Amino acid sequence: MNFRTKLMGVAALLSVMLAGTAKAQIGKPFIHDPSTIAECDGKYYTFGTGGGGLISEDGWTWNGGAVRPGGGAAPDVIKIGDRYLVVYGSTGGGLGGGHDGRINTMWNKTLDPKSPDFKFTEPIVVASSANMEDCDAIDPGLLLDPTTGRLWMSYGTYFGFIRLVELDPKTGKRVEGNKAINIAIDCEATDLMYRDGWYYLLGTHGTCCDGANSTYNIVVGRSRKVTGPYLDNMGRDMLEGGGKMVVAAGGRVTGPGHFGRWILGDGVEKMSCHYEADLDQSGRSVLGIRPLLWKNGWPVAGENFKEGTYEIESERRGYALELVVDFTRMPGGMRGFGRNNDEPIKPVASQQLSDVINTWPTGNIDVRIGDYMFRPHQKWTITAVPDGGGNPGGPYYKIVIEGTERALAATADAELVTVPKFTGAPEQLWRIDQLTDGTYRIMPKVVPNSKEQLALISSGDSTPTLGKFDMNSDNSKWNFKAH
Image (cartoon, rainbow, N blue to C red; front, side, top):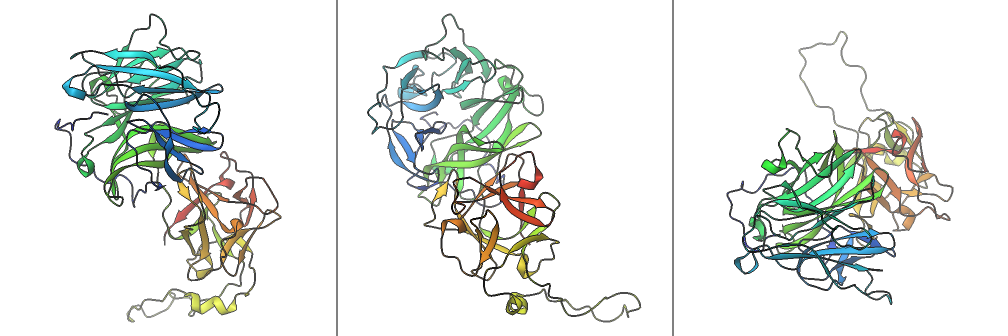
């Protein structure tokens, strides 16, 4: 994070990468340079520039309250064992016109400032820069290598190189004798992650700190070794300015920067960032959380679910979720064979809700999966429930038949039904997560009389039910198609 606006001739504001509008979190999610999100005792934390940060009970509504001493800029946090390691830049980034900087680490047993165990250790300097050397000691990012247990830190800004150093995961100190390695240029606010034999270097490219005119975007390169070289999809080295796009501006938010990876479970990953400006929130810098997808071995920002009317399609075979009601035929028969091809062309009206609703039962109606024919019993309107709470990156939704209040609900025997009217009961609230392959997981907030977390699954081509989510099975995956 560079405190001066960097007018360095980078491209103008990038075009929308994903369809629709990317939404930030709710509450007061105002933060700049957020750390990777960490969980502590059932709550979520992220820290930002200037000290302090945000806390969330559910991962959707964020407010201030996190505490981090030392001030400074662009922290990161990681849990190692039963402790949390926080790292931050105490100066640098052009403060006062120079590039003097220090990066510090400190430990805490908890991130909850109300806990009796809440006490940060004294900061330890693990990297520094002086005068006009070719690296700023600021913007640290941490990786605990899951294959070796070694702890790595990348750091630096546009003013010179991005560097990599090794830290001791037991002490938070720099490994004695370790020399910094140059791994990238032309970016800042870097972060590291590991997946399937690859190390990924995420860098923030473009200009910051200019509100709606900031051109921040996040790019990536990968390497088989943590020390690099980090190459993009075209084989360009990040030491030569390479980088594949992960996320750019879109909708009403601009300037995504400061990537963090948040793994919620098998197949469910999120990425955190800040948007330099949310035009719907006074142009302020806000916390953003997006699904993290993987395509051909590369990370890319997914889409937060958007309200609308959809076919809910099973990945298993491509059939659609529908009400168990009698099929109502449309008027007219076969058109073709032997007909007069010179007769006038007239549109045929689609079947409407009013054509069929009086044939449906008035009480509960079961659901099944069947051939999609864009009929009223197959169209689902999905909207957020304002007082329904949320989950990491999204609210809970109600799922109703279009034009009605007939709502999808979980039953006490872990099955599905539609009830005549949405009441806001927790078994009528649904969590929707985009998975790493781009499909979706659909889960009820609760299953009555059960503590299990179950998902909507297709137990057969025509049979939906609730069961354990399995990322390796298409039975557990769904798509939403607007028609």
